[in-house]
Structure formats: C-alpha cells, structure tokens
Image 1 (tube, rainbow, N blue to C red):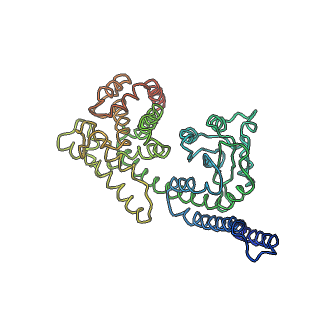
Image 2 (image 1 turned 60 degrees about the vertical axis):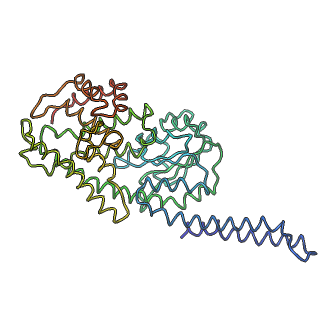
Image 3 (image 1 turned 90 degrees about the vertical axis):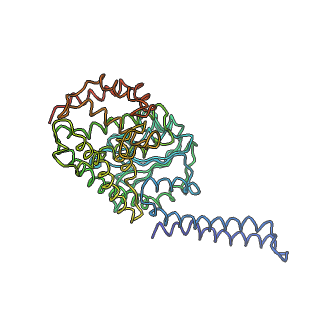
Length: 437
C-alpha cells in the first residue's frame, strides 16, 4: 500500500493540490475581474489533464505487466511504455546464479543506436563479491550513477567498459526480489549525463516488485517445461551409447555457428539475443522423436535397409508431435515456448536444394534455426564414431560440409563457417581432449 499511496500522491493528489493553489493565485491577481482569463487557466488545466493521463498510464502498466507471459515480451512492453516516466536508452537484467554467488547478464533491450549492446552483455558473468553490486542485492539499496566514466575510474569491469563503449553515461540499478529473496538486478541506462532524479527512483521502486514477480514466474515455467522435455531427449539419446554426448557437442557447434553469423552480420534481422538463447535451448531437442523409434532400427550396427530408413525418418514427425503437444497445452494458458523447438525438430533434415525430409522444403522455406542445426548435426555426426563408421578428422569433415553448400546447406552459413574454421577447430579439439566417461 505504501507504493500505491506514493503513486496516487504523485500523479493525482499532488496535481490537484497544485491546481487549487494556482487557481487561487489567479483569482487573487484578478480579484477585480469578473472572470478568470482563459490564457492563464489553460496551462493549469493542461497540467492536471497530464497528471490524470500519467495516472491512467501507470495503472495500465501495472495491469499489463503480467499479461504477456514470456519475459522477453514483458521486457519489450516495459521498454516501449516506461519512457513516459523515466528516460533510458538501455534496459538490462542480470540474474543470480550458482546459489547467489554469480551475477549473469540475462536479458537486455536497447535503442536502435545501441543495437549490439544487449548481445554483448548477455552471458557476461561476475562474482558478486568482487563487484559494487553486492550492496544493492544484499541491502536492497538503489544505486544512481550520473557520470559513468568518473564512477568507473580505477574499476576494471567488462560490463561497465561495454556500457562506456556504447556511449552510456548514466544509470539506475535496482534489486529484483520475490518474497524478499533477491533474484537479480535491473539496470536503466542513458546516453545523457546527470539525467536521473529522485522521481525516477520512486517510480522504479514502485514497479520493481511487479517486474521481479513477472520474471520469476516465467523463469519457473520455462525451466519446468524445458527440463521435462530435455530429460525426455536425453533418455532417447541414452539408448545409444555412441551418441550419448552428441547433444552437448552439437549444441555447442550450433551456438558457435550462430555467433559466426552474428559476427559476420548475416541474418541480422533474425539473430537476436532471444534467438541465440533459443538455439542453445532447443538444439538438444532436435532428435527427441527417437523415443518412438524401435531399438532394432535405432541401435542397428550396420546400415539401414530402405524400410528401416523410412522408419528412422519418422523420428522427425514424432519429435515435432511431442513438442507441438506441449505447445498446444501451454497455449491454453496464452503461453508460447516451443516454436523454435518445433522448427528445429521438423526442419533439421530438410536440405537447401529441397531433397531433404519430411516436407522437401528448400532454401529459406526452411527456418534459419533448423538450417543452423542441420550443419552442426552433420558436422558432429561426421566427427563422431558410429556403429557403422569410424570418426572422420576435422579437415575431412569440414571439407565435406563446405562441399554441401547450396545443396545440403545454406550457402551463407557455410561461407561464414569457412571464414571461422579455425575457431570451429578450437571447439572441436576441446571435445577431443575431454576424457571418456
């Protein structure tokens, strides 16, 4: 109630009191006049109307915060609507990890001129005990920095350095708590110095709990659903000892390929921070449909017959059905989570020239996520031992992938992969060094 009282005082009671005072002053100045001059009253009326509009908008903000159940949607809503109350060029959220010891950049949204900033910040990790953010989290205090350059002198922080490079000059940082338990922090930053005032702090204090609750709810739902389906995926992979580590490797390759594309500024309109997180989350589910394939086919040590191959191909539709069932059920709650997962499962065996399966899609008819995973999946299959073949070396495998450009694979993806083959080889070598479990 305390925060609600502040809202009504600031945006309703205070303007009304101010209105009466101003009308009184006008009346005194014009006590010999029979009417109040319209020219003097008009700005007062406009001011009180603005106060009511702000109150309506704030109530609308609070009501709408929990209507979009994806947190990216909530963050987009905050970014597009809060500007009437507080100035910002960037909003960032960092969540507590590893039992509260680590703070990790998790979400971000910026003005177009700072478009790459969220991509650079998401994934950055720091030990809380080594940062100035520990006091904010432990004590629930608000930090205001109105000159970031001066503040960061003699403080070597990757996060702050990236903000400075982007042109950020001021910020407000607040803790995010649910039931008094800290879950992370939220930053509102601006490219203008000395822009943040007490009124901005009060506004954010009012809404920080709602932001935290929305975020925590969505993290819980996401993790519960994701963990359940990932367990099903791992159960399918575990049936084949030779491919048990396939999930980790091909996911790492898929993420790395996506980063190559972002670095080369390819598919910029699609490769956003949520897209990269989606690749990491849903790449492991590409073969979830193998749970429906008979052991005699899945575990056959030799090559499959034509009929067996047709049976194996069904894992794509089986997997899509599993995820689509999950998606349809949560859609009843106006929630969406598995769109990219379905795209990957259905599309990772399609080919650029239309000769793949199950629907013989070609070119950009195949979702980008599936085109990326197709490359990662084949590369890991080539470099891994299978019951029917030995593992190929890096050079032989990468050359095979490159030869498939324009036929099996998206040419842009292969061109980017070719430019970054040394980095891909480093990742490949790191997996070769891992001891067998």
